Length: 250
Length: 244
Ligand code: FES
Image: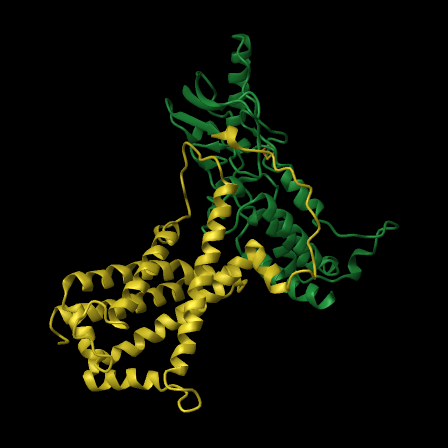
């Protein structure tokens, strides 16, 4: 099928950027958006044009490396789908597709469609783990977890950290990401000892880079893993409690 | 556009504990400001509902509503001086309004910083008219509060204003279609503000339970509708001569 691409091109973080238009002709409708970019890039390289820079890795919706605004929607038009899994048969012959990078203060642009998401890593380093003494692995069945809690924690753990929530949020907030990473630990017994210290530290780093939540719900709609904003409410509650507990402790 | 984006530098200082009071510390964070907005929002929402219900006495006639107004001035009298109770309410409500506005303004400033570059193309999915216009409906409401106090508490719009005759003051004001129009528009804005705010505060307060979550929407709609219908009915009743 024949498509037209409008792509944000920006050679470096400080250089000015602009939209460029490229033809994407004669492409198999079973190609994904990213495969289409591969093909277009091959052609651009042959013409001596710098290929379009974009991120990807697994190409099966599980790693969270890909991420781009497609026609004003994070990860494109499909629900609960990462950009790498959006196939061209969702488009009609002759369509124009606009590709823009994630735009947020916390995600500085590196090149073309690539942004630097290391602010997410900083949030994780602030507490997105459970401290354990190394040694032999503990017996798993010693810590019972009821099914409902386990399922909910698993829903939170489905977050692939792609940043679509930040990209979609009009405030550039990372509440959905942070709350998912908090909830997957805070809901389980293993996460309890560090629960409130973790919450406070991760929220503090989050607020440094990202905006605040006005409960629009855009993040939930954009999330390729369908993470619920219920987790944001849980984070809010734990943060409030953390303030009381840490006050008592100090 | 994108070139205005900057790499945030700071390696974060550890959260300072124990230097400022915990409440100042809490309010210093964005989540703390959201809490402040939710809590003051609850106070103001409760007030708005009670205010509307009290005003229904307009339909019972001059004696009833004037007696109600007099009773408001006597709350907690003689334990407090006359109007003492009323002034406590005024201070709490005024303080709530100021905190609500300050937090909203601070968050708005910060959010603008955190999303410096706009998308050229953006297709919103989940936002609705009410939540996109919160700050505008909020500004309308703030201006309206000033107008409303000047109009029916201080009597600035009415040369024959009489503190003891609430009924007469209301009829005099609402007989002017312009003033009645201001009340109607402001209350519609209030309705949208409540529609998002009353739902949103549950999220912010962390009151979330999957079994009851759908009720939060119904409650927000019910509150918005009850307040708007009640409040808008007063100017309409005067304009149409039902109350005169
Ligand atoms: S490339 Fe791994 S999720 Fe898209």
